[in-house]
Length: 255
Picture (cartoon, helix red, strand yellow):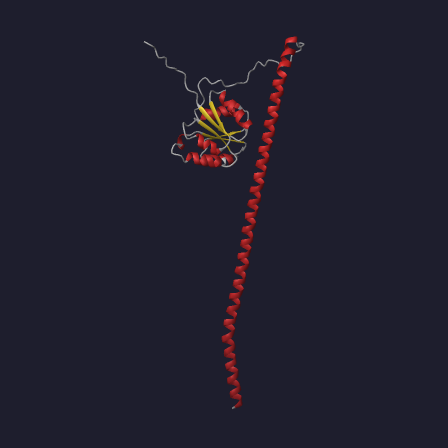
């Protein structure tokens, strides 16, 4: 008889990170991975909605500003789903303040995680949502810090290791530079989009103001025309009476 061994390992909770910034996705994914999460990432709200057609994650971290559909609209659509009430949604944003927090919660977000490397804030959010995995390898500050600088002269092995690692470090440095350039490009796109949206808003406000002024001018002209018409109507009977009286007076004097 073959014995069937069943695994008693608890499945890892799943998290979906929605952000168009590669650096933001990488940083948050690492923080969640160290806390025992299985992490998936997408770079748009549309991709997130498509990804959620199957098994739902335990928590969704939704960026605020996204290309295409914005984060708050995506949260509203998620809450409108039949299974939307069971979702844990955290806004992952650079917006900090009670005003945005109220808007995000009104849209359906459970919590707000301001973009930072502060692990304590993330732990607090996961704790409030009852999502902190048991036995998670949560990094904590250590009181005994090992000094990074040593007075010992580098040995031949350390120099060889340094020469060996130098190409890898150069590749890592170049990747970081490319990531930063990508971040700047994203910021420039956001700036251009905000500029276009601002110009569209100004154009719409100008059109509404011009239309309001034109309506006021037309109404003023109509009022003046109506007033002139009323004056004519009042003057004609009065002139007729005066003319009749003058005719009668002349006839009286003649006779």
